[in-house]
Image 1 (cartoon, rainbow, N blue to C red):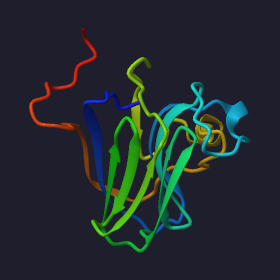
Image 2 (image 1 turned 180 degrees about the horizontal axis):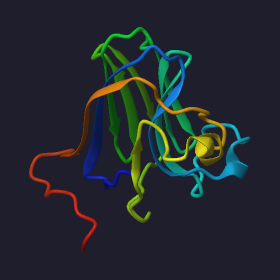
Image 3 (image 1 turned 180 degrees about the vertical axis):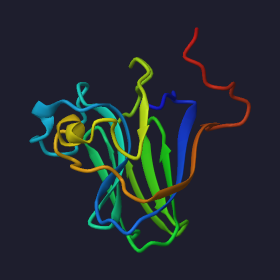
Length: 166
C-alpha cells in the first residue's frame, strides 16, 4: 500500500466534485473477503488495502480494519479537497482543510508488501467492486477529479528519500 517506512509518511491529495451519495474514489491492495464480517480495530496481516470513497455523501477512509469518517457533505456539486496522511503509526483524514479525523495506535507498516496498482475512480470492472472491496463499496465514483497527488515526506529533517531498494 502506498509504500513508506517509519521515517516517512504518505500524503494523498484529491480535489473532487460530485452529486452522487456513494462511490469508490481510490483503491489499492487486497481485502480478504472472510475478514469482512470481523469488527474493525483488529488490524490483520491478511487485510492490506487503502480505500477512499464517499458513503452517504461523506468521505470515508479505510486502511486495513480501520475506518475514518468525515461529516462534511461532499455530494453537493462543489469542489472539495480531501487530504489523507498515512504514517506508520497514525492516519489522518482532512476535508476542505477544516474537518479532521485521526486514528493512532495501529501499525500501518507495509514495506514488505509487493507494489500494487492504485485505482482512481473505481475499478476496471464495475461488477467486481463489491467483491474486491468485500462489501465496503458497490459502485464507482461518479463526478470529476480535478486534482490528484501522491507525495512521500520525511518525518524529520535530514532523512533520505524513501526507497524500497537496499
